[in-house]
Image (cartoon, rainbow, N blue to C red; front, side, top):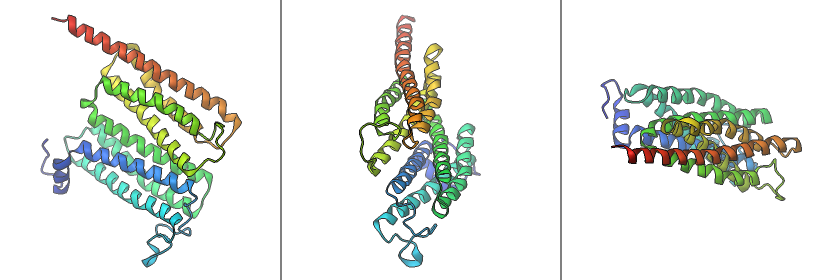
Length: 291
């Protein structure tokens, strides 16, 4: 991999040592961790534990450190999000300056970088002015940033991804959907207490569902043709619908659309597995018959 003389030396040394795909993957992991830690802070009621201070907390020199276990959850969420922000900015600058990085990737990560200050401001508002609208906007902005970096990460790894990865992503989605059903607050599954652990698990499953759908669609679109591509392309928007309805507070009126979207997503994943396996078998047969 070669770089021009305009790329800063710190970028060149980092990319030469680890590779840009690895840097982008690490950034994606930090973004996902930040989302889940934010969910943990909310689920444990720790969002206001730093006495509504932001970005400081409620103990230590200049109130920079947490003074209790609840405030630790909120403080640690901010701590990790700080490193996620640095990684986002670094990934965007590297993509913009390094000529070997696909311009589509550069556009996606720069868009994520532009959204990051918005997300930081919304995070501040969840502490200073806690409302459900602000909390919801904070969550969906985070999911948007996650999606942008996920798509960019898939793009940089696409040359190494095959039809087997498509099948694996679809299978992961099929396994994750029952867990999402059980853990969603929309569905009364006999769960008496919606504990913080269950909330955290539900959101981890949600990100897994979204990730599986996007990976299957992006890689499948390059590796397959014809009918096999149709369910793969339908999976990401259906996954977003499932996430939207699945995170709502218990509401009987939302059960039907949530269940309908979930059934549609299961059918899409299953159809994708069947059709892509047939496509793989046909391709293998064609290769075997070719001279």
